[in-house]
Amino acid sequence: MRPLKFFITFLLILSIPAVCFSNDLVENVGEGQINWTKKIARAKGIGAPSRSQMGLPSARPLAIRAAKLDAYRNLLEAVKGIRVDATTVITNYTTSNDIVMTKVDGMVKGAKVIKLEYMSDGTVEVTVEIDLNKGFAQLVLPQDIKQVETIKPMVDNSIQSEGVFSGLIVDARGLSVRPAMAPKIIDENQKEVYGSAFVSREFAVQQGMCGYVKNVTAAKSNKRVKGNALLVKGIKSMGPGKSNIVISNADAARLRSSSKHLSFMRECRVIIIVD
Image (tube, rainbow, N blue to C red; front, top):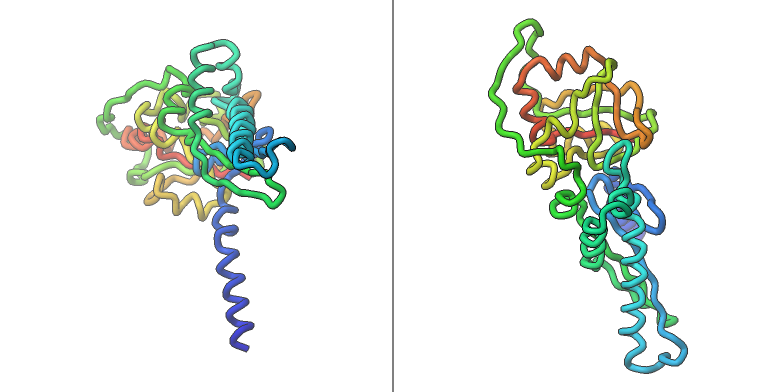
């Protein structure tokens, strides 16, 4: 019985990473993947030595080089498909601005190799990834996201206080919402509740304007909003890219009831739950 128990325990341990990964929102873009939860773009490439090189010492280095080039090419295509907001994808920038295109291309070519596998037939598979925060975010986030100073607390006494919220969780499941680097949350009157005008660029660059997860448990336990986060339900998605979310006027009023609540928006402490 002991070997059987050990085997079952071993299988359960192996299953843990898969369960954890299932909470990540991963989108396939071309031959690559965008992990919106971890804010990384990843792609694989395969390389094989030519027949004339088979068996020679130079065969493997050439296969590795070919695999890296293939991975970088796939990663670039995936990155170009990333939505910046509800109307713009990164390829819009790169086709109209040579400087941005050159910088994006340079970042992709500098992507980190996270996995290198050698196959029995001599082929090599390389996996590369790039961080979508920090330098990349600084390059592609809209320029209207400025540095915002600390907000002086002011309370609207006409609305009953619920305490200070530690963050905002928007449940947008079932709305066909598609993630973006700079989404907007608006009320039923089309007035912006959260977006580029509410955040400070330093926070948007370092951690993204919002986080994306796939369930309420993952959202509430996320350190970005952990504490007294306000949970609201999205009504519908908007914009060509379906990245903007409409919430009720009542929920919008709760957020606008105190400038203390604007402080967490400034620091991008927002989580969006999507399917």
